[in-house]
Length: 180
Picture 1 (tube, rainbow, N blue to C red):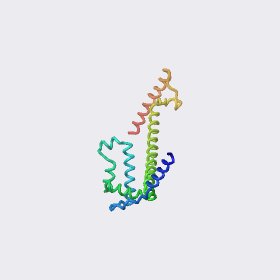
Picture 2 (cartoon, one colour):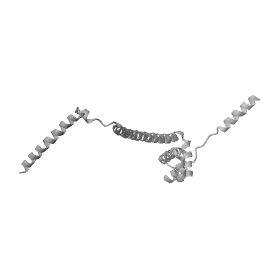
Picture 3 (cartoon, rainbow, N blue to C red):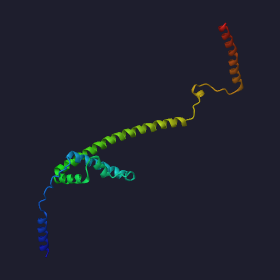
């Protein structure tokens, strides 16, 4: 019984491996460059949809319709061209490889811009931190910096005030003489 089932399985397998024919070339076949651009935009829109699906839904944006409108095509033309190119694995692989390289290039550019933006944000944070730290410091005592002793008793303060008062009239007299 097992031998019969195995024999039927091999016969079924041999019959089912019939030669698959290449799909007919569509009348409105998209070029590989157009297909590459469409795939690129579909992948970008799918990424945007994954990141911010709610925003796209609120705006009423259907990613596929948007891409097809952008490239002046429709889903039937795209899928018939896709079937035609998918039959030839090497052509299809090259098409998708081109899209992958473009996406990686865009990613590198974006990462470079992102790193530059983060560097600028870090610089701004550092400047703000330094400014905040300088405002938090207690004001320094200029008398201590200049090594001038503050006046502590009445005798010292009288001497200073006397010196100021005694010099003031002489300055006035010299000014009056200069005017005359």
